[in-house]
Length: 268
Image (cartoon, rainbow, N blue to C red; front, top):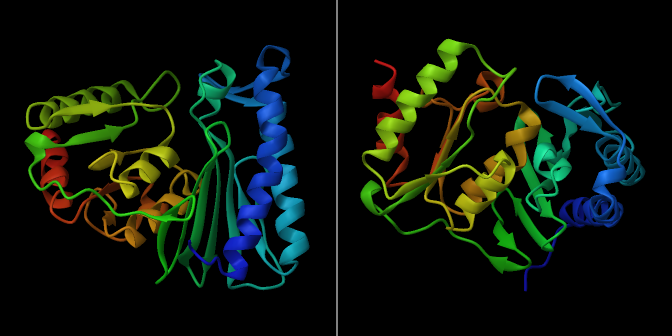
């Protein structure tokens, strides 16, 4: 069994408290107050409530840390070097449609580097955790990325652009990427949560993942999960600029470059 550090324990406790209420909200999904943030981009009362619980719990444990939150935006803390990056519900559209595939995400950024992260699937009670230099775990069981080395044997995950996200040219470019990867792989999956896609790469369920147009809170916790599970993570140009670029490619060490090349050549 993994022995959690103080910081991981803080994150787990906050996620579990928020997750208890979120499970109740999910059971009453038809009654949720829903408003539009933009085309096909919803925010619910559950989003705001979950973020509020997370902020309160994390602030109580580490009062000096700042925040970067999906709903609440950026809040500087007295400690200029540390902040929490929070996504209260990654997979909100799944949540609102009664699809049990969404997660609470918390990452700790220190001096510009993600040093700890958790992704919690409250419906299935899956707690993915990682801390720099300490490995990655699923419910206290050590995780490793898959051992597959051939793209033709591998399953890759991605996110598909939708109405209101990206231009028509972006959608066309993505279809070219899909065609390129489909032709050389065992399949592509689109489950609707970038955070859980990254967690599944860390757990060896997916062999790789790529997506554009993401926000820091979509990726931050998943980045350290994949790295601590032995995988490679970069933006789509191969740099360590995922949070700035809004793009990511994560895979096993053997598949990271082949997957990046498949995506890259589609843009030629």
